[in-house]
Every structure is written in structure tokens, then in C-alpha cells.
Length: 333
Image 1 (cartoon, rainbow, N blue to C red):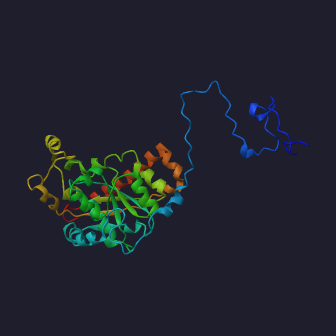
Image 2: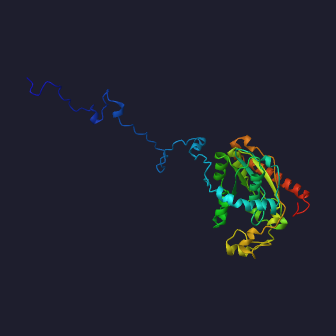
Image 3: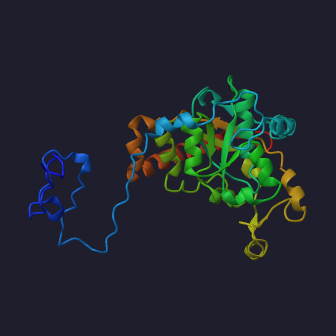
């Protein structure tokens, strides 16, 4: 009788044993096996870091659901625009609109009653009054009044008091991402000045001569957002706050982007901001330009974008020339 029991006798360790490098048993599961090492490539760059694992980003239209829903009773929106502050300033804005500048509006029906649209206008004046007057024209004359957001240079928001107040009535830092969200995601009206700082620096003898519209960034924004461009021509702002000269030395000393000399500045200091001359304003909204019909890929066509920007500029310049020929008086229109 076997004293070690009736079970099977243990196997001896041979060269075919898995412990000595032999093959695994046929019934071993795949989960018990270690993954095979990658094949050695003798020509590979030993100093190259492994590629990071990147998950595919969801489509942009799926991310729109993450935006907060509109709140009709909300007084301050995500951009800092305050309806309460705007309501407090509206009597002053309407005084300038109706009695000081006596604004005459044409073609306001070209501004869409719903959905996003990019308004592109000429720009002028030491402290430009054209943007608030365009805003009031839509608010007072349009059959479906809507808030108008204005894009401005980043330096403007850095001035205490002035930058905060402008933000409360709809000024947004000029950046393609901001404009895209306003136009595409929120369906708002956005006003841009393609001349930029070059427009407000113009001296009196350069009035109503449009500067170059940059590289057409506003055209790219409109195409990618899928919205029309509404050209706007404004006369009167050049005479309301003219610039007779620039003092370069005082620009460097004060840190201002320009130090203008006119009828009110610098001898009246900050009070010059309220000392507009009573020039007669005319605002003409031109027919929309529908570049969005070409598709988003048109925004990457440099030649097309530049040509479209030049065409918008030419339309505004032609309208300005026509309005100037029709004007009998700077003060009476």
C-alpha cells in the first residue's frame, strides 16, 4: 500500500516546463498571459518620446449644450452688460441721439430681427460717439430692437471707470473667440470697426478717408460663425470730436495710445469727453453681404478673405462719398 496516498505523483522539472521557458499549457486562458513586448526596431530614434494618448474631441456643436440657458429676468449677462445701468444711461444717450446729433437713419431694416449678424462700420473721433449712436439707432428705429455688443481694443478696458462703464453697456474685448461665441452660439448683433485704432487717430484733414481694413479678420469671423455682414456708413462723428494734431512726446509721457489736440482737449481735461460739437449725424445701414453661403472652409482662403474685406470697405467708402455730396451743412445736414 502506498503511504503517500492515491493522488497523482508530482511531475518532474524538465526543459519543456513553462517555468524553464517551455510552452504554456493548451488550456491556459488568454487573461493569464502577459502581453507580448513590441518588436524591437533598430532604426527607431531612442530619444523620441512616446506619443501621448489623445481622445477625440467632441464636435463643437455638441459643446453648445454646455452654455447657460438665457435668463430673461437677469440684469447682468455673461459679458458684463447690465440692463439696469444701460437704462440709467439711456436718457443721456437719447439726448445726444435726438437733440444734439439729430441722428438720421437709413436702411435699419437691413439689420436682421433675429439671429447673429456682424455690423462693420467706419470709425472716427478722439472719443468716438459713433458706436453709441449706432446702438441707439437700432434700439429706437428698428421694428425689433435688440442689444448691440461692440468690440473694442483691450487697452480700453484697462482705464478705471471708463472701461467698466463701457463694459456695462455692451463693450466686449476684441477677440475672435468672443465674437464667435456672440455670433454663433448666442445669435447676437456685434459691431466691429475694421479700421481699428487707425480710424480714431485720423486728423481732421483725413476725415472720411477709410484706412485699410486690416487682413480681413472680421470677414473670417463672419464666415466661421455663419452670419451676414451688414456694412454701416456714418457721417458726423468726424466733426463732432475732431483731431487737429497729435503730440508724440505727451503720448510717451502719459502712456496714452495717442494724445490729441482739439477744441476741448487737453485744456478741459476729462470734461472734454462730454464736449461734442453738435454735428448732424447720418447713419446708413447697407444691404447685408452673405459670405457665409460659401461654407466655413472659405475662411482659410486668404485671397478670398482679403478681397471680401476690400469689397466691404469699398461699399462703405462709396456710401460715405455719396452722403457727403448730399450734405449741405455739417451742422444742419
